[in-house]
Image 1 (tube, rainbow, N blue to C red):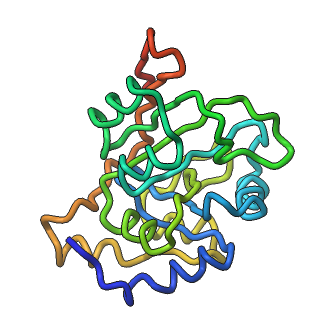
Image 2: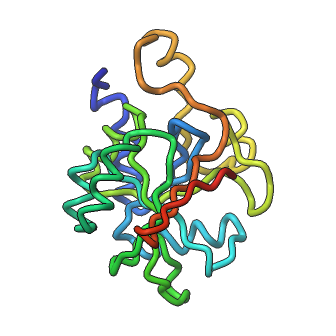
Length: 198
C-alpha cells in the first residue's frame, strides 16, 4: 500500500532538517533521525536521558538497502532474509558506527531493523537515507505504543498521529503494531545465534 508523498512530506522535511520525528513501527512507537546526522543522534540521547554507551538501532527500508550500507557477511544476509521484514532487531558485528553517541566508544556491534511498516519504509525511501531510532520514552520508562502516548511524553516533537485513521482506511496494510519491543536476534557470533526476548 503506497502512501501519497504529500501526506508524509512534513516528516521527510523535518528529518532532512535534523529534527527528531516520532513514527509508528511494527512493534512500538519510535523516535527517529537521519543516520548520517550525528548531532541529531546525540540529541536523542540527551532527550531520553539515555546512557551514551547504549547505542540506538538503525532502520533500513529493505534488505537490499541493509546490504548496500552494511555489507554483511553471507550468513548474516541469509539470516536477514529469514527474519526481515518483521519485529526483530538483528545484532551484528560491523565497522559502521550507526546509532552511536559521538562521545561513546564504538563497540563494533550495531542493531539493525527492517520493519513491516509501509509508513516508516516509505519515509526512509523519501529521505534517501537509513534512519536511526529507538523507543519513545525516557530511559527505563515504559515505551509509547501509540501516537497519543508518544505525544504525551515529548510534546514538542513532530509526531505521526494519523496511524489509526490510516489503518482503518487501509485494513490490509502492514502498519499494525505488536505493542511490545522487538525481539533481539544476537548474531554477533554467527556460530551461536541467539534470540532474546525483552
